[in-house]
Image (cartoon, rainbow, N blue to C red; front, side, top):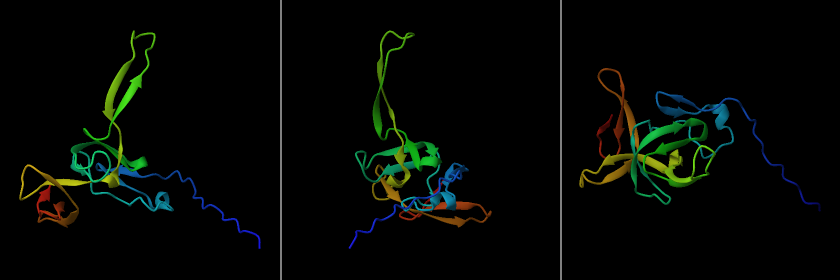
Length: 149
């Protein structure tokens, strides 16, 4: 019997990409087709404090500086530091070595809240959403029950 050749699944390169709405990532259904590891929306917004769940920087806490919706990545202050070598150019005499933050996948972080038992320590949590008396949506930490601003 001849071996069957499996065709590799290809997905259309749709011009529709995730968009940033009110400092959060919202992905479009067409863009998500075939991407199993990307969720539709994330509860982490610009300026939130997050904790890294895995990788070299596991357990480190930082503030979200930038959201990159097209890549499902975020830039966190003090996390995923890389060393960048810059060549010397005609205007400069010497090259330099710069350390800066690189983007990290959004699913590698969780929203950080202060631990009730140890206020100096941060813990990662999921959030719930509910409407308050004024009709605005609030984010509530599942582990501690506090409202996140």
